[in-house]
Image (cartoon, rainbow, N blue to C red; front, top):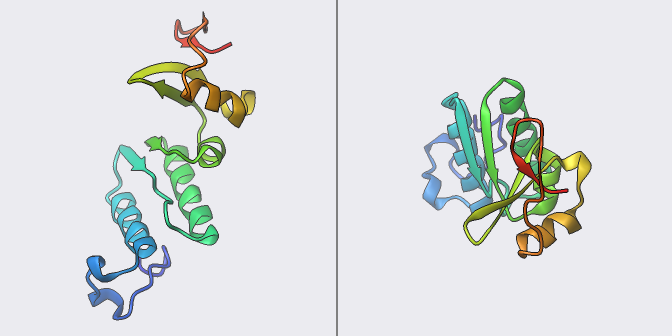
Length: 133
C-alpha cells in the first residue's frame, strides 16, 4: 500500500503515521480504508492537503470503488472535487437536503447558491425524489 498510494516517510514501513506529513497521513488512511474492502466507503475531505498527483490518484480510487458496486459517500467542501467524482450530488443547508443534482446537469455556481440557502426543492423525479429544477 505504501507504493500503491505513494505514501512517503523517513523510515518506510516502520514509520508511525502520526510522525508523517499531513498529506502522507491522509494517503495512508485512504489506503487503509480501501484495503478493508468496505461495502460503504465514507470519504470526508479525502484529498485535503494533498498535491495534484495524489488528488488525482485518490479520485481514481474512489471512482474505482463506485465502479466495483461499492457505495461511496463523499463529503467535501471542494466543489470541483464533488463535480468530478460524483454521479449524484445532494446539497445540504441548515441540516436539511435542499437539492439533488447530477454533475453533468448543474454548475458549481448553482450548487453554491443551494449551499447558501438560495434554492429549495421544486419538483419530483420519476422515483418521487424531490429535485432542484
